[in-house]
Length: 141
Image (cartoon, rainbow, N blue to C red):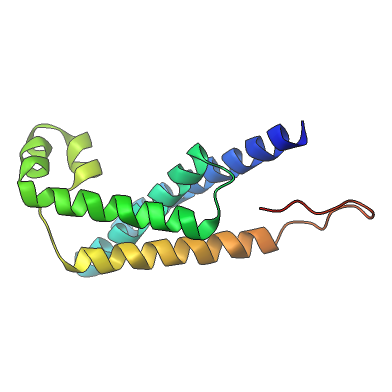
């Protein structure tokens, strides 16, 4: 029962983090433009993927979740070399938002920045948890 509660809590936290990440992306777009908004958007794209990975696999360790998120981000970026995301994005806003349009090598760096930032934020948030009651054994994450 504790495992189920822990998984539900972890999924709720990942879901909340996903909502905050989307809000941060929209906020950056509202206050910044040009390269700042684009680079922040690239990093936040990977942060969002990180939260979605943890939503699907709540017990995954932060480093592994970051590797998955960065790998998925890189896969999408490299897929842009085919031209398909650009063609699909002209017909679908959702496709454009999820897949982007054109390959841009610096984006690969920003995905790594996002993955690293997600791990740091995740570990910091884990450190803010209240201490377990006296006599309880702490859970391993």
